[in-house]
Every structure is written in structure tokens, then in C-alpha cells.
Image 1 (tube, rainbow, N blue to C red):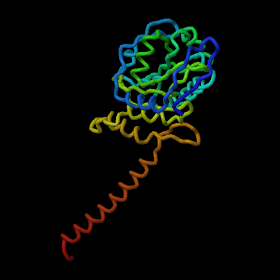
Image 2: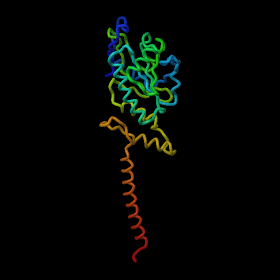
Image 3: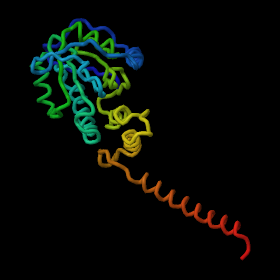
Image 4: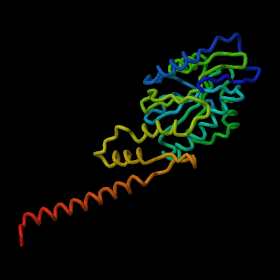
Length: 259
């Protein structure tokens, strides 16, 4: 699902709603891929100023919610708790960051965002909840291709999680309020381990191995390092080595001629 019709508290109800065009919203979201996200100033739950540029150098997961939502936005947040926790197990806490931005500028104050974070049970230290003024929120939404419009129930909006690369460019859009962890972790894995990492360096070789050998186990809902690739490679090399030995022995016997 890419569209949410969130139920809101009465104080969030807005004036006459425009028709939400889901297909147009999805096209706008996809068109944002590759766009740089920069120049946005927010405040965290303690009221401190935060520029998105502070996260440069590592992937950044961006979600937009509004605190007056009673159904979809909490589900999105719970899904992100699971996915980001899985990512933290694989990459550690310093390899990526996440921000959740309240897009209802009038209501989503630092205090409301702090209460929302607490009520949702968010404990990951690399995940920040942010508030902004209306012009900033509107500009961010346009940049990342996030569509929202007032409705009688609060807001109709895209159910979208955006992944930025280390240079602040939009790398991937993840849709839905209940996606599986790999939908988020796999793009992060490609960014963190680097699909273009040089295998000529030890670090590059290790990252390339981790890229292909860190796999998701659906039964446990967790990632693990799969050693079967190395076992298969070792077996294959053993067979090749044995064949090479036999060929070399036969070549030497032929060269030596009859006894």
C-alpha cells in the first residue's frame, strides 16, 4: 500500500480536502530518486537545530509521519523499529542513521514528537525525531517526492520511507506500512558495503564478501552470515586442485617417456 488515509485527533482536522491522486503521487515519488536532499533545518525533540547535512557520509533513512494519526503512522513506525533493529544487528549503530519528520507543522512540535517517540517505544540511538515549520516541511516533501493532503480524517499521504546515500541523494523509496525488513536492509547493505568497492584492497574484499554473504532468514526474521559460500568455494578449489595434480602428474609421465 502506498497511500494512507490516517485517522487523526479532532484538533488535526483540516479544511476542505483535495482529491488524492495515488498514481500521480507514486510517479512523483519515483521521479525524486537521484535528487539531492540538502538545506533543510529542523529541530529535534530537545529543541536543538538539526541540519540534514549532519548525516552526510553515511546512509540516512527518512520517514514522514504526523503525530495526530492513530493508525497508519504508528504502524509505519513499528515496522521501522523492526527493520532498523535488523539493520543495526548487521551494520552496527554508526553505519547509518534515521530521522522521522512530523509533516503536520502546526501540531508536530518537538514536544509532540518526543511523546510520539516515547509512546512507540523507539530506543535506537541513531534515530532522531524532528519538527519543522510549514515552508521547510513543504520543501522537503517536494524534494523527496512525498505527497500529502488534508482530508476529513486528518491527512491522505504516501506511505513512503526514503533512503539517502552518503552524499545526500535519494537512493531508494520503500513503500507500505508493513514491509519486510529486507526491503530496507538490502538497499542499506548495498550502500554500506558498497557494490562498487574495490576488491584490490583488503577492506574492499571484506566488504564485498559481507555484501553477498549476509543473508536474511525469514523463519527467524534476522540476518546472519552465510558460511555456505566459503564451504562451496573450498570444495570447488579442492576438486580443481586435485584435477590439476592429476593432469600435472600425467604430463610429467608423458614427458618422461617409457621407462
